[in-house]
Image (tube, rainbow, N blue to C red):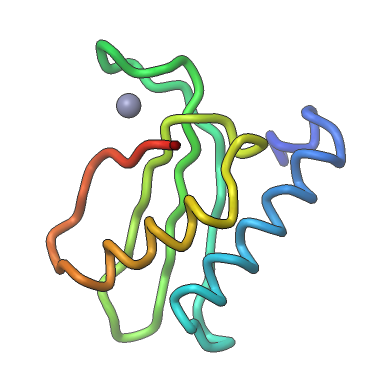
Length: 99
Ligand SMILES: [Zn+2]
């Protein structure tokens, strides 16, 4: 079952765009996999929907980003900043945010 299919084609198109932008920003090769999903966040002070981006690279640590907004609101700049932070620091940040 594809949960995203219930949201219509627009959502998966956006996910594809985000995947491509993340791959470009992190200079990923073909072996890497990027997963983009929208999740409900239960933490206090968080918006109801956040976008989780996971990057799986062979022989490297998995990366996971959380953006505090639906994927429709994520801009290319958000992705660039998010990836730049992740490249700078090895510690995983649990929460990102949208400008
Ligand atoms: Zn949250």
